[in-house]
Amino acid sequence: MDYRYFQLELGRDRTAQKSLADHLKAGVAPPLAVFAPLLGFPSNTALVLLAPGDRTDVLGAPGVVSGEAHRLSPTLRPTEVGPPMAGGIYVHNWFTIDGGAVDEFVRLSGEAWPDFEARFETKIHGLFLAAESDADRVAGARRLLLMTRYRDLGEWQTSRDPTSDAMAVFLRRRDLTRVSLARACVLMP
Image 1: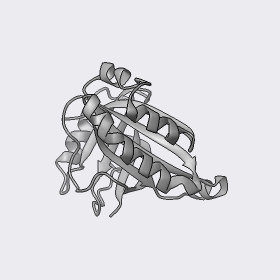
Image 2: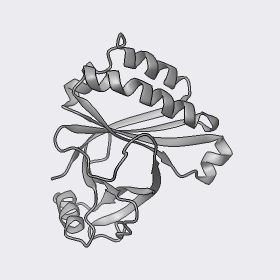
Image 3: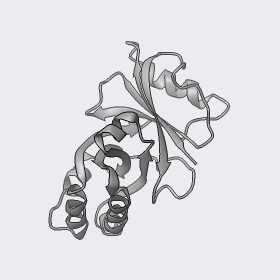
């Protein structure tokens, strides 16, 4: 049950993101989500999450100049196929971790989430394991994508509280992490 996730570079048309979202949503199988950049992504980027089994030609959509496709397997979440919750901001955090640490990384994530979601206005949409690439094998690494909804950027900042139980667990998870790259975006209506 693999999802497909695309990071797309769009043309210079300033309405390119909306045009892409409208085009994809009018298709036979609308995507689960189309995200527009907020912080950390180039301004001409769109992110698309497709449901398992959806074979929509995202890379060939109008306005798409180039893109990367990733095959993602859900770990603890999402437990069912459905769109992310509307409103707020989404932080897409790519983790590169030690290759043999996937199970522990996922376990620690699930251990921290109840306190994290109870304490802050946030919701974990999903933690996905990316298909292992040749580069991952050579480096002895694995990649995971965490999609988290926050009320706003202020809530994201507040959630960095080092005294929370969740943060103590996240610090243990950091020991397994080689690189973490968190970037913010918004869900397009």
